Length: 137
Image 1 (cartoon, helix red, strand yellow):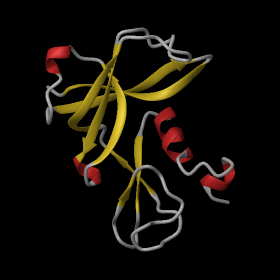
Image 2 (cartoon, helix red, strand yellow):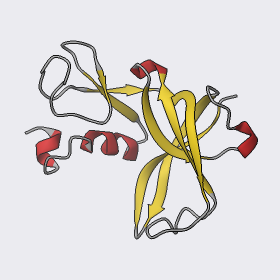
Image 3 (tube, rainbow, N blue to C red):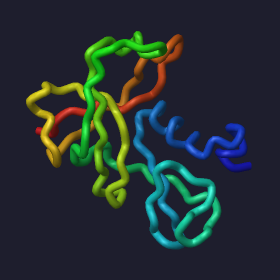
Image 4 (spheres, rainbow, N blue to C red):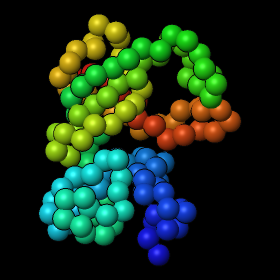
């Protein structure tokens, strides 16, 4: 049984499991070497089933960000204001992941090298594995 089948069809279940274990893992098709995110059950490039997951370094380049100043349901554990960043992963052919920003606002520069700490974020009544990005030194 595949991970997706074991989790009721959730193609991204291995991503969340890896994060909860302190690893960043992204799919890469063995047949055509295409990186996938969001997760897929079948490679859209070559048709191979269940592309395997590869652990990669939690580092990349800052692509974009947005600051949230208004609280909304489920985000009470984050506190406001907070900044969500989108990071391009060069080792995964530029695939982009979201996470929370831990640095100062003046460090938010497009293309800046960043690194992530894998932690947890309180969402509602649950702690959800998450990426907490900061400027690389």
